[in-house]
Amino acid sequence: MLDASAIAAGFHQLAPEQLRTALESFLPRNATTAEKISAIEAGLRSPAGESLRDAMARWIVDEIVPVTALVPEAYVSWRPPVRDAMMFVVARLSPARLAPKLLDQIELPANTPAEVRLLRLIAKVPGLQKLGQVIARNQHLRPALRHALAGLENGIRDVQPEDIRALIQRDLGPRLKTFAVEIAPCILSEASVSAVVRFTWRNPDTGRRQRGVFKVLKPHIPEYFAEDMDYLQGLAEHFGDRNHTYGFPADLIPDTFRKVRRLLRHEVNFAREQKTLIEARALYQSFPGVRVPKVIQPLCTPRITALTEERGIKVTNAAARLPASARRRVAEQLVEALVAVPLLAAAPDAIFHGDPHAGNLLYNNRTGELVIIDWALRERLGREQRRHLALLFLMVSLRDPVGTSNEVAALSQHHIRMTSPRGRIVRETTTKFLSGMPASHLPSGADAMRLLERVAMKGIKFPGSLIMLSKVMFTLEGILGDVVGSDTAMGFTIARHVAQHWLAHRSEFRSPLMTRDWFALQCSALLYTSRLWVQWEQAVLDRFLTANSASPAPNTAMTA
Image 1 (cartoon, one colour):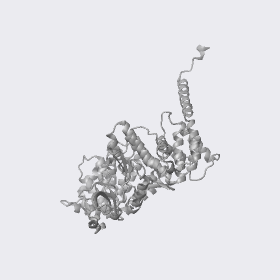
Image 2: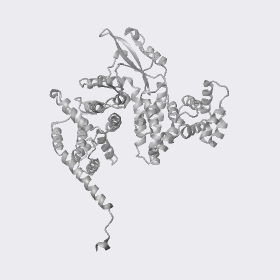
Image 3: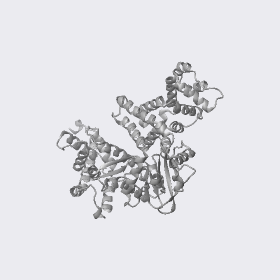
Image 4: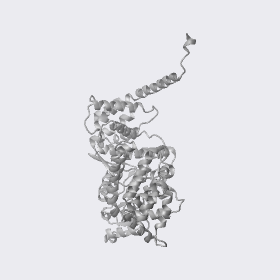
């Protein structure tokens, strides 16, 4: 066992680079891996456990996975909260989870890259894995770190095939024989809380063998889930109490941890996702070019979701193999499928995919079909909300300050009259936002969400569903940037979707937009060119005045 008193006395005096050697010296000589883990765990549980945790946390964040290597110079202001968050988690992981991780870090070669060490640290810690997935969507991260974190979307490997197979056999029991199920020997992919394996089965309706995939809750998740939820809640409260320390908006960091917590809570609720998949499949049934896997209900349990196997590869990888014109069509297809279809759905309440990162979007280059998977996180918006949201996207695309202001006010949590003080805030913020967009810029749905965020910073509140949808739009914007590398004119793509898909089927035309909305849009469209012309003239005038003000003043003595 580790000498607790020696740890307490000595570790605080050591520099980070000395801690590894110090810890190694306390481990029992010629011990097995299990005995070493047991020794570290005993030390963590001892009276000196807090000192050991603090020392190990300092070693991790300052030496082996230094924050300076993870957070680029452009985000230097984020280094203190990132360091504090890492220290917080190490201080709260149970000894049984932390001990093997510490031994793993000690035994890794000294030249192991920080990115590799980070992935090993967060193995079997779904809260941190999910946080890594969220952070990986920031395109400004150092490429090596972003590439490593992007692997968390599809590249997690912390469960064995035999463990997944045993769970399937235990949960399905005699149904495996009834439906002649044959399970593949290897894991197809892993996420933070689940693993996916292929299988074939005999469909009694057709009498034929068909391909499917099992999405299975990992065996260790029930054991660790409560602890992960607790430290994520603790992180949200910790940064909420100390937001003034870091100089960020009060809710910025806490909201990130709340989002990760919500993601995890929904991802372990397989029954909820199974119902969502059925609803999503019905939503896209009549929309060509988009598929949602079909739930195989006889083979589902609270820990297993059985689905039809859909062919395709990660959409960003698929698009990289296509010419520019085809990539543009893929981008428009993404906007139509993830924004336009649910936005203009006939149902009273329509669902949006709540986590559209590239790993959840597969593309089949041969058929041109987009497959949307992993519906654990979704958002539901009512008909009236979607009506004003659609109008907001279109009015921002038309750069209409009056129409846009009206829709921002309509989407707010409380009714706002445009003549009230809050109405003036909305109008002034909107006008400034639209006039600040370059004339060459094609506005997107993400621009509309940036406007809502800017208005929210002025004290105007919006429903939680819109806040979550804004994160979805920013995630989608990043994927579209990877696909086409430029603006995608999201608002115009929505308008084209309306014209080509909905107006072509007038008998089925039941979008949330009303007749008066179409009239308002047509009137705004007529003035679109003149608004652009005025903005262009203003830009030219501003440059002219700036150039003149920079010119040297005439010599008054000589001119006299």
